[in-house]
Image (cartoon, rainbow, N blue to C red):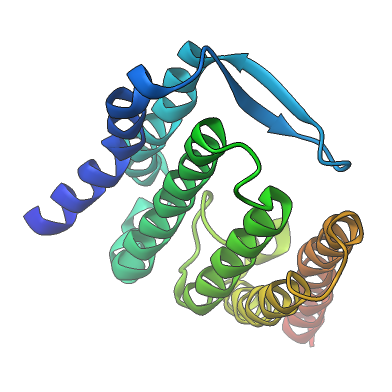
Length: 216
């Protein structure tokens, strides 16, 4: 447990450490946003500190959510999956800060749109593997009202969501190497919409089946 806690703390503060170490070398204006046409919005480099601090807030906030969840007793049943989820999200935030710092020091070195899309895809693939292990709670997983109302529906929804996250992420990842950058964004958005919409609809249908089964 101490090792896991240390790892989470380290990952939470790493973006701040990265910014602090590289701060003297950074230009006064750094990229803070990229649009679909490849245009870059710049901001003062001091703004990187609050951006990097988000990972620290996130690292503190996630354990707090587990303590205030009305179903907090369920977190013990998927403790490893919850830990893995926190690691994945923190690593994603570290990579995003790494992209910003790299482009600040070496403008144009990365194809930012493709790299970000690839990282989102990898995150989806990893989360898809963990999602079927999530137990009923109000903060993690596919939290439809019907899934939260019925444990069988919850389990089915997480299994379907996990498969869609995994295969959707795989499609997005492959597309990163084959599709023009602008079309890649809209294609990825469409896939993400389906990943969220399909389990939501199926969750409702499964709940109706369960309700009708109880009536009989």
